Structures are given as structure tokens and as C-alpha cells.
Image (cartoon, rainbow, N blue to C red):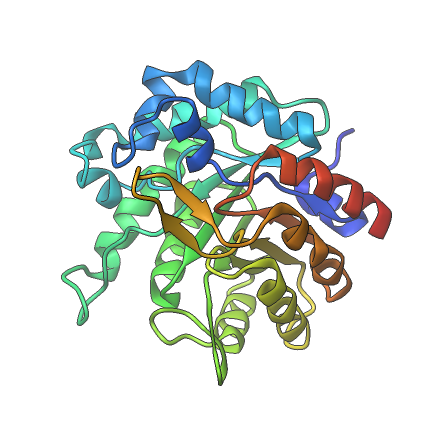
Length: 295
């Protein structure tokens, strides 16, 4: 009988995939458009990216559904297609999942703010996330990853919504900035506050992704490990993005510099590692060797 994702995490280090948006753009996806529509319009491209990550050594890949909540999709006029696009995202990834591999349903932030900073209420956020989680669950993902969350309140809305509609493990990763006082989200939530709250809610694996490069992520993992015994997820960016005059995005941290800090991320306590913006299958291929070596 095959292991569940949580059983695998308890058994050994687990490797996720890397960036998705850049891979789409390299294959002709127009910047500024809605990535989730390609789950229906160009499924072969999405499938090829997932396969490239599995081939590079990923134990699990994340679906092309980061902006798949009804609220986020509404900015592209695609909110009525929320269930369809998320179910397709899960189905595509499952079609290239190897034996022993896993598919995680990616649930990113809405890009909006809750009252009083914004116009949205918690029930509105929960409804938007529930529709997304339902599509991902019906597409047969193995787990859900609520990721890149900059507001603890929003992350908890997504968690409640996912648990209402899906009988699946739900993991949560926040995104932090490094400031002199430590690591804080955009909305001012400290790493300790987020971890304590998520642990209290019974989230089985927690962590951080995006924003930080691999050096800062190693320090954050160390700080998180001092607060919680839960499995930790760490997916660093390849540094800060910048835009060229031709409109091409590049990242400040090169491959060798990025990889240099992966052993430290592992040694500091990360149980699940992967890449975020600016990383690609080459990064994951090299990380697969490091993960095996570090044990």
C-alpha cells in the first residue's frame, strides 16, 4: 500500500517543485493573462511543466491554480469558471503523476484585503476559497497547500473553507519579509504568531514560501524550528525579481548561490523543500541530489 504525503514527510525529506509562471511564459504564455485558463486551453503545456518537475526529482508538484479563487479569477472575468479551471488543474497534474508521486492543490491569496483595510468580509473570502478547493478535491489532488499568504486572517479563511469541502490534508505557508525585528508578513503578522495560530488550528505542516532568497529562508527555518515541532515547508525565491527594458523578468540570486544554502535550510529543520519564483527544473534536479545526500 502506498504512503500518504504525511507518512512520506515523517519518513524522509520531501522535495516539491519550483516556479511555474516563468515556465509558462517561456512556452508562450502572455504576461498579465490568466494562467489558470491554460488548464483548459493549453493543457498539454501545463502537463509538460509538471512532467519536467517530476522528471527532475520532485516528490510532489503543485497544480496550476495559484490564482484560482473566484475573487482572483474575477479580475480576469473568469470567476464563473472557478470549479472547472481548478478541477482541470488537478486532473492534468494527475495524468503525469508517477507511481509514488503526489499532487498538491495550490491555493494562493486573493490579492485583496479584508475589512477594514479592504472591502471583503471573511465569509466572502471563505466562499471564494471553498469553490476553488472543491474543484481541486474533485480533480483528485492528494493534499492542499494554502501558500504565499501575507495575512494570517486570510490564511485562516482559506483553511476553514478547504476543510469544509475537502477531506484532505491542508498545509499552510505564509510569506515573510525580513526586517530588523525578525520575519513579518505584509500585514504585520510575525512568524511566531502565524506558527502558533496554525498549530492551534491543527494544521499538519506549516512553513514559508516566496519573497525571501535561500539565505534568508535558511535563517527563517531556524527561527521557525525553535517555535514548532511540526513538519516545516520551505520554498525560497531565487532572490528579488527585476524587469528588463524588454519586459523580461530576472532574479538576483543565481543557481549556485541559491543551492549553496539548501543544505543549511535542511540542517535548520526543513522537512519539505522546493523552489519558488525564479527557480526551474534545473534547480530542482540539483536540489534532489542535495536532499538525498543530506538525508
